[in-house]
Image (cartoon, rainbow, N blue to C red; front, side, top):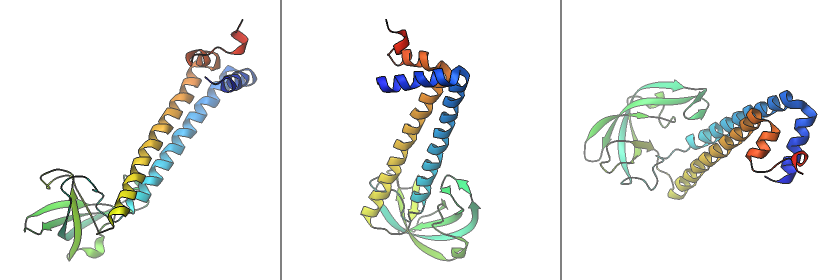
Length: 193
């Protein structure tokens, strides 16, 4: 543990006292968790605006399909698509070979205004058969799709870092500064001989 951090924590422990130090650490854990969730959902929202299928470099590739939109449902204000209100619609998807199946289109790729009329989309499936775990979207530039994929991966890094921050503050709250410093492998100056 860095001596500056150790000394700062011990000063806080002595200044605030054990109860207030632990409350402060627990409060910081809650703030870090809240900030992590807000940032995570913010990036999910940004990625949800991406109009493509989101299946770059996965599965057998994209193919054109014709979609007839059925019933739609609006979800939000907070959902798996992040912040805001989004349309999810049932649809019949027909591939170029004439095979048709039902699918659920998310992220407002289609809306109730598209109901009943054929819409040309791209389908990208993550499995080899090309029949399950499929994403739908509009045709987009491949580099744009790679950029959105990288932003999505960055989101998971942010989630892990915020989870580690929450764990650190909860450990401080649970152990207190002296035991936390010992746990991290260094003794506070007051305990050194």
